[in-house]
Image (tube, rainbow, N blue to C red):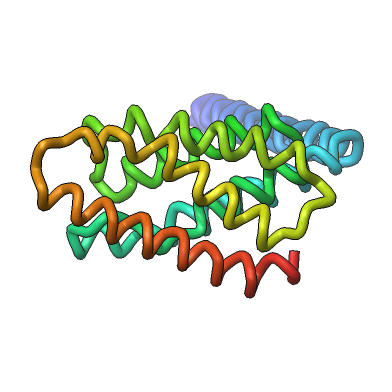
Amino acid sequence: MAFEQFYRRKDSVKALAAKSSSFLFQRKQLFFGTVIGLLLILFFRDYIKDAVVLLILGAIAVLSTVYKRFMRVPPAVELVTFSTVMVGLSHGPVAGAIFGAVVTLAAEIFNSGVDAFIIGYIPARAVVGAVSSFFPGANIVHLGLSMSILYNLIAQPLYALQSDAELRIKLLAFVIVNVSSNFIIFSLLGGLV
């Protein structure tokens, strides 16, 4: 009887040791992962800060078109142009172009608005992001207005080529509202940034 109790205790001690060693191993992984994460943050904090700012700008731009999901109208009032111009100005032509293209695609996907005309929207927004970077000293309102017009000149010919008169009226309304709203957005927010 005493012999059986000894082996049960020995098995329970082995089980306890196995549990505690796996617990310590998990804690070591957590500890080393934390140390590596902190070192990465220490060495790459500027890049991480920029990435976080770009993610926030992108999220705001995508969410600014959320009304398109509920009302089937083109997103003429949006912050995608503003954020694309700001990224182009602050991070250069490549970052501006990539940001504009990715955010435009993300906004279309998020709002279930992917259609054939996206082949005009994405390149137009990329051009806006790239071109805006070449005018760092420009008046932000004039630059924003110019980039809004440039976007519409590149993106809207596909609509203009349609034979449907209703689409042309929608196009005219979109361009007027888009350029006007971007003028207001750049006037209000341009000075803050």
